[in-house]
Amino acid sequence: MRNILLTIEYDGTNFCGWQRQPDKRSVQGEIEKALSIVCGAPVSINGTSRTDAGVHALGQRANFRGEFGIPTDRIGIAVNNILAGGLNSIGSVGDVQIVKVEEKKEDFHARFDAKGKKYVYKILNSQEKDIFGRNYYYQINKPLDVEAMKDAAKYIIGTHDFKCFQAAGGEEKATTVRTIFDLKIFNQLADNRKQEIELQIKGDGFLYNMVRIITGTLVDVGLGKRTPLSVKAAIDSKDRQKSGHTAPPQGLYLYEVYYDLEELNKF
Amino acid sequence: MRNILLTIEYDGTNFCGWQRQPDKRSVQGEIEKALSIVCGAPVSINGTSRTDAGVHALGQRANFRGEFGIPTDRIGIAVNNILAGGLNSIGSVGDVQIVKVEEKKEDFHARFDAKGKKYVYKILNSQEKDIFGRNYYYQINKPLDVEAMKDAAKYIIGTHDFKCFQAAGGEEKATTVRTIFDLKIFNQLADNRKQEIELQIKGDGFLYNMVRIITGTLVDVGLGKRTPLSVKAAIDSKDRQKSGHTAPPQGLYLYEVYYDLEELNKF
Image (cartoon, rainbow over all chains, first blue to last red; front, side, top):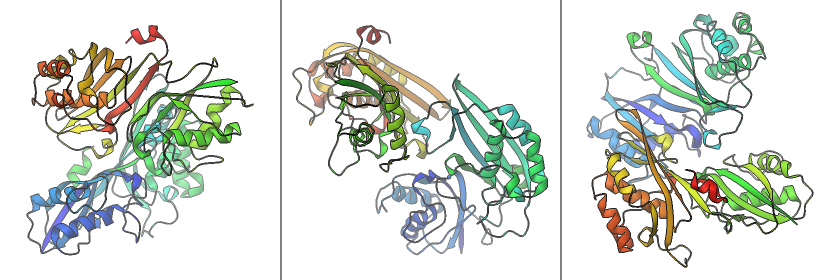
C-alpha cells in the first residue's frame, strides 16, 4: 500500500473551505476528484487543517493511501493539469495547486503526525480601501499602534490554556492547553497612509478560530480599545468574553505544517 | 444641468468588461444601477475606455448629466455603500468603487475630452505558478530578457501608424496613427527565481487591444523569439501578422486618464 503526502496551495476565496461538503466547492473535494481521475479509483485524502471558507493556504498537507501505478513525481503534474482546467478539467479556475508530492511510510498520517503549524495573518492598515486586497487582507482604516500589538503578543507566547481564544462550534478538544512557540509581528510602510502588517504565529496546535481571535484581540489593542496587559488577563480568565473580536477569514494563511520537532524549533 | 465626472477603480476579474450588456455583470451596469438609486432617476454614464473582461482599472473615468439634489461630495459615499453591499445592495462584492467625484462644465465628456491615457501591464516572471496572482499578472515561467524588451520598447515611443498592434473586432477608427509619449519597463527581483515586470505606457490614444499586443510582442522579444529590431519592422509593415501575440487581459490596468496636456507631458 502506497502512502502519499501532498503539499497544497490554495486561494480560499471561491471555496466553501477545506472540508468536502455535498454540492459545494471545497478544496478537499476538488483535489479528491482530480486524484481519483489520476489514480483511476476513488481517492479520499486526510487534510492536516480544516480551513474555513475564505482562508488561504501555502502549505496545507494531506495524505492518501492506495495501490496505483502512477509514479510519485507525476502525480502533482497530472493533478495540477486537471485543477488548472486542462485535460479532464473539472471546471476549476486555477486557484488550487499541488506544490510537492512525497512518498511516506504506510502508517504516516498528515494530521495526527503533525508536530505543529505556522499561520500568517495579513492586515492592510490604510485609510483607503484597496479593492484588490479585499480577499487577501483584513483592511483596517484607523491607524494601528503596532508597538502596542507587539507588547501584547508577548503574553501569548508560551504554554497556556487558550480557552479564551476558542470559538464555539469547533470539534470538542480534550484540552485547551497549547504551546505558542513564537508570535512575530512585522510591519512595512508602503507609504505614509498605508502599512502592511503581518502576524506570524507558530504553535503545536490551534483551537477553533484561535488565530483569528488572537488577531482580532491584537487589533483591538492596536486601535487602543484595550491595553496589552488586558490580553494576559483574558488568557488567565479562560473566558471567550474577555478576548477580542474574530478577525475575518480573508487575512489568514496556513503557511506551514511541521512533522519534525527540529524544524518546529527554528523560526 | 449638472455634469459629474467620476474616477473609478475596479478589479475586472468578475466583470464581463466595462460596457453594459444584458444579463451580464458589467462595471458600467453596476455603477449605473447604484447611481440610479442615489440620484432617484435612471442614470447613464459615458466611460472613457471600454475595458475588456478581466482588465482592471485604477483610474477609469466616466461622466453623467442630470438634475438631482444630492451634493457632489455625497455621491461617491452613497454609491460605494451600495457597491460594497450596504443599504440597497445590488449584490456586488466590493470589487468596484468610486474614488473621486468632480463637478464639470455641461459640455465636458469623459471620453471625447480625454487627451491621453496611461496603462500599466504587470508580468510575473517566475518558474513557479503563483495562484494568488492568477487574476492580476501575466505569468511567464521561462526567463525573460528585460534588457532586450527595453531595447525593443524604444521603437514604439513616438508618433507612428500602429496598425500592426490593432486587433480585429474593435470599433472602426479614422486613423491608426497614435502618439506614444513614453513606454517604461521596470523590473524588480523578488528573489532569484521570481521577478515582477511592469510596463507603463502613456499615449494620446490606443487602438483595440493595442497595449496587450505591444506587451505580447515585447514578451516574445524577452523570450528570444524575435529581435528588438523586428519590432520596428512590424510597425513599418502595418501588418498585424508581423507583431506578436496578444497578452492576456488579467495583467492590464487602466491607470490614468488625462484631460490636461501638461499632465500628459509629465511622466
